[in-house]
Amino acid sequence: MTQSRTHNCGELRLSDAGKTVTIVGWMENVRIVGNNFAFVVLRDFYGVTQVVVETEEMMNQIKPLNKESTISVTGKVRERDSKNPKLPTGDIEVVPEKIEVLGRCRYNELPFEINRSRDADEALRLKYRYLDLRNPAVKKNIILRCNVVAAIRSAMMAHDFLEITTPILTASSPEGARDYLVPSRKHPGKFYALPQAPQQFKQLLMTSGFDRYFQIAPCFRDEDARGDRSPGEFYQLDMEMAFATQDDVFAVLEDVFPPIFAKYGTYNVASSAPFRRIPFTEAMERYGSDKPDLRIDLIVQDMTELVSGSEFEPFAAGNTVKAVVVSDCTLARKAIDKLCADVEVQAGQKPYWFKVDENGEFAGGIAKFLAGNKDAIVEKLGLKPGCFVGVTAGKKLAAQKTAGVLRSKLGQICEGHMDKERYEFCWIVDFPMYEIGEESGELEFCHNPFSMPGGGEATLDKAIAGEIDPLEITAQQYDLVCNGVELSSGAVRNHDPDIMIKAFRLVRLGEEDVKKKFPAMYNAFCYGAPPHAGIAPGIDRMVMLLAGEDSIREIIPFPMNKNAQDVLMGAPSFVEQKQLDELSIACTKLEEE
Image 1 (tube, one colour):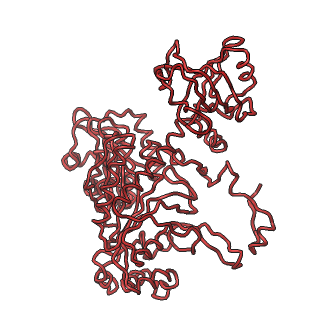
Image 2 (image 1 turned 120 degrees about the vertical axis):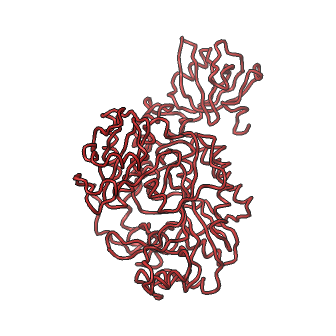
Image 3 (image 1 turned 60 degrees about the horizontal axis):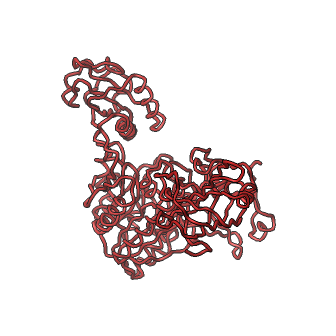
């Protein structure tokens, strides 16, 4: 070992008995038994070792120290009388001959017990993140992240990808989220933007003649936090391939991901290639989601025609009605009420329900509104005694999404309908190219404006001529989903300027608008761009899945809180007026203190 130690705190074994060693670390615990007798648990990155103080001299050095002080201990290894089989070092202890204080903890009370930091309030954990990270259970996630990133790098390079870094200071670009802006001192009134993703740069690399690019890329988006998204910044495996199709991208990730998930995941079973491919419309119809959890065996069924003419107001004409059937379900009324409340909170719409009793009769919930068409409902939905049926109603998309939330929650709480201990991948393909904007009420791009439309230029020509509805156009865009979590979006890119202009024309933007908004990429494509495709799986979400965590903050070394604040460093913060003057910036509104 280096760093003035002969061994680390997870290394010593019974075979080392009799050796004189030097170990260093934090005093995790001190238990004083008598005047000159104490047990000290010393912890470093690698593990813990028990140190037994037996002399007045050594006791005088230990007694004044607070827990979490760092010390160096030189002494003899001996066999323990009372062994601890739970510890790798549980057969031995070190009797100190010399103790040196390396870093004194000056506080008698810690904000939380290190080994129980995960039970502490999150705000306190983030404020004292350096203490939180001393907890081996917290540190384990960060080590996992390092190992996963290393494995990804190795696998991508084995597939002949080059790791190329792209700029952090760039131009603001309309990519769907708010930019983080950086004022320019040399160019007053102008701003750089932190990249939401290296999207344009990686496509420019393809036009530059690089065949396969990847990067563990930092991305910056000024958006709100949620369980699987960190506010402010995140990392993704950004990749792009020249002269490539959708199948080429799929083949790479289907080869790279399963071994990593099987090796590093909480579960050691992961989908093998080829992953299942599900068109977007089918995903919404069968699962009520474009990121379905395929570990759940429940499906969404349509019962709109079955309830036509019903007196139940939510089933009124024009509404879509969906059903999720669970066989052999014994949910109590209290559990059903909680289920409905949870679905309503998450989906924004109330679900309904009924049961099939042991006599085959409908009971509970909305059963009385269905009695007139019972036989048809039983036959269409395949109902049997003991079935529980969750029902959603509303505009088509709302009914589908509410059914998707209902399906997910039923799969989790109804025994036998979810194989939890596995990683189930799928591709969602054939996304709609366009949608009607909720605010504008006009045609807008549904996702990535640089995706190649299905059918290419001919499809756009038909839409421009009014021969087909633009909403019928699909994009060569795809999402990678694992266990109900969207890991990534990708696409075959629209690399032809003529096709690009026609795609933008449908959303009321002309050639000059395209040139103005995306000058570098448009001009580069005019010099002969290769067909190319790519994807960018999120590293943070991936590691969260592998670690079995519910919050993405558990796998980020120094995460922001839900309000995009770094409470450890105090960011964002006010700056001095001198700095503002240098940047020609005047603050017109200050946050209330």
